[in-house]
Length: 216
Image 1: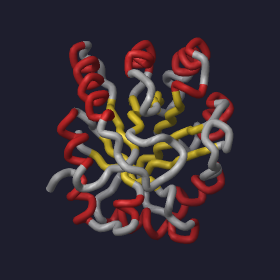
Image 2: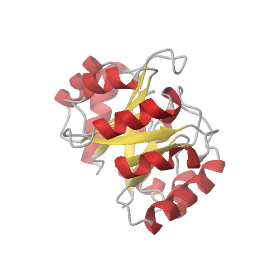
Image 3: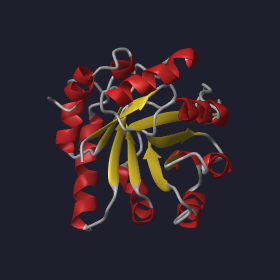
Image 4: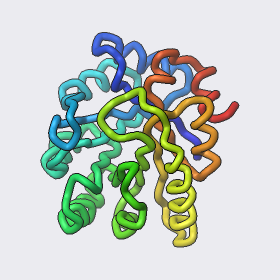
């Protein structure tokens, strides 16, 4: 699998639907919605109403909810009916609470993911992997768009790919941050399945940009 997800974080509110539809016309199927509470990260971002509005105004797509919040469980309940995938951060909860969340949310009608920040060792999320559908590797510090790709993420991706494949697990590796025509092919070659691109893709939402992230 080599898929691209568009992050609308830096797209103006009145352009989000148009940008989404243009990307879908050009082959995109996956949209990544960043939810921030101003506590886990300094900024705030999309609300449930924003996401629902964009989904209603656009062609059908995979709705990927990325929670950058301090109380994941509350937000999961808010977004569960609109989401195809909900991912929260390992760092936002204690180890025990985080594991309880992923165990309790199996088979609830949406896929679930666990995210880890650039400074977090991947070994810290190994216990989550049997219970999730996606591991989201942050290749920038969460909370702002337009940042430079952290090349240490490539080693994490490779190690995760090996860990997942050796155990025969059906878990997707998603990568978020600084993805463009250079870093995209590098991340795919390291073992990523889905790459989230914001500024690079949404500033020019063309088929050529989509293909360039795949190295075409």
